[in-house]
Image (cartoon, rainbow over the protein chains, first blue to last red):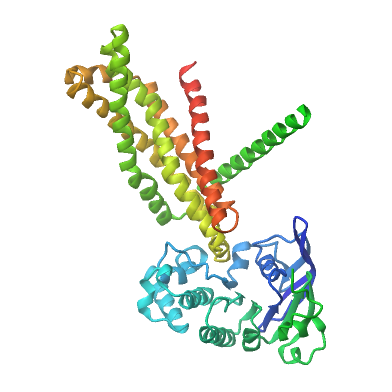
Length: 248
Length: 259
């Protein structure tokens, strides 16, 4: 279980997180929604330790994430980055098997390659793509490679940062379905940040809305449409009028 | 008016000193990681190839033209006081003590520092460095250490090759155009150079290599966002590396030759 307790983070005068409290139960899929620049990615990066919060505490299964063995902590995570964040200098299979080629999870190269090809197949890519470089792939394919890399070491927790941004609706649907299937299949805890409501409905068990640096609303995805929270209502219906200012 | 002018100077000096401190700490951290596992031999091999082997053409061409021009300059300048015969000695000392290491250092700053800064800065803006961290890989060990170590090992070699090619350039011009005797030229060159000259050249090469790689890595890892951030990191890294190489050259020359 991941818990954020009163987490604050500011960049200069810009107070991005102003007391975020959130609980993500093990084996569930939490989607965090909110407008651009509301701090969704910052919250996610705080959990991973890529950004240090100014105050507050983040725990994983009751343990403070800033303490203990960092490698062991990170070995429990997989992450799909918004732009894929594939390593340009490495072929696709080495991107996917990155974790299996070095460090504590290192395996022989042939075995790592086989696993990478299997994971590529799992996300709908043919083995012929394995030796290409990321720049030779389309945006949708790069996203799938990123997804294959995120699941390659079979992590307990997977983070998805804007998984469908920049994709056409069909490819976005394919990615959403893959994420849902993989999360269910692996029994992983998932945390996704997005402002794509189609993704939310496809991926989420629970939804949390981040606005003005705090969680404005959280609950099961089934309750989202029935909620009378004015922030949530404006956001999910994409209205320009409401408590959320359209000019930020 | 004067007070505010002084305040501006003071602020800039303090900012420059703070930056120098951060760069020094960054460099020391990279050295401390060199001796602690995990090690990445493939990345080191790739950096050795990029920084060492692929820099050979530019280093060789720079050295050969500089050696040739130096021979012509010394010959025509020396003729003013009947000292044309010192061409082999002055070319040797000029190339080995100064021009070899400095020009190789500056060419490495232009070729390698810019490339490292642009590559790492692009990795930063496209979240590849964050991805490394989430894949349990320390960017300092994976990206910085191989490049700094490769520069430390290969730039002294490049300098020694540049020295030889530079002297060969001077030799070719002197023998082919200025009428020097080939055997006498080589004899004078070899006899004139001291061990201290060669050691200073190699030490300078090592120092300039480290400066070039550390500047590229530092500016890349601390780049701003977007294309402008990558451009700023590349420009800043080459400027800083060139200035630090010239400053370090002054200091090292003082250490080796003014005692």
